[in-house]
Length: 294
Image (cartoon, rainbow, N blue to C red):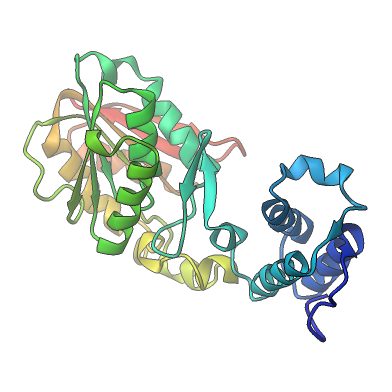
């Protein structure tokens, strides 16, 4: 379908269009081509993806065929389907996503859940939390939406990412409870002012970043991925910063690389944290570190 002349003026059935697109994308090494094509088709038809199985004989209008073709061509260039759709779900909310920030991922949903599950964070009547490196704002917005009595400070060093976070906070109705700050790590935040710090920092080492699949390497912002020569460059700054801005007994929650657990534990200990826990993601790999200030 993607190659050749413009779509004909007559409607065309969905099933062969999808099958042709999947074959074309598979030949170009695109991962999970059927899932991506079905997501595009579901958007064009304004249907839930699961309903497509009942719609395979449905005939697409010429403009729908053209829209599907445009999306498939972008997939063929290894652009993430999330950026093509322009939005993605995170903890049951639909966030705007584009190349200004990382695509929200399931591991980060788990990070938010770990914050929600820690009773010590929520003892204050109006707990204050910092989302450091907010990106799309998925962490800050989720916490603000799920704990209305909380106050969130969302920090990012990239103005474009911070603007995307503001847009998501506005569209999801929590902008009034999030303060947005452009800055590096916790710079500018008052000492001993937060009940928790949450962060999904850049933690991939520079060499691995250069070898990531094209859909990540060529589209998602390098500044949100690259953690320096050993992947710990940002964490070395962030962890001592977090220790300064947390209240006594305040908590730090981090998403980290699967092979960084003991190195991060050492950084947390050096910064004065206690009750350090390393936890696994749904694939069984170490992915999270959390710790408490004395």
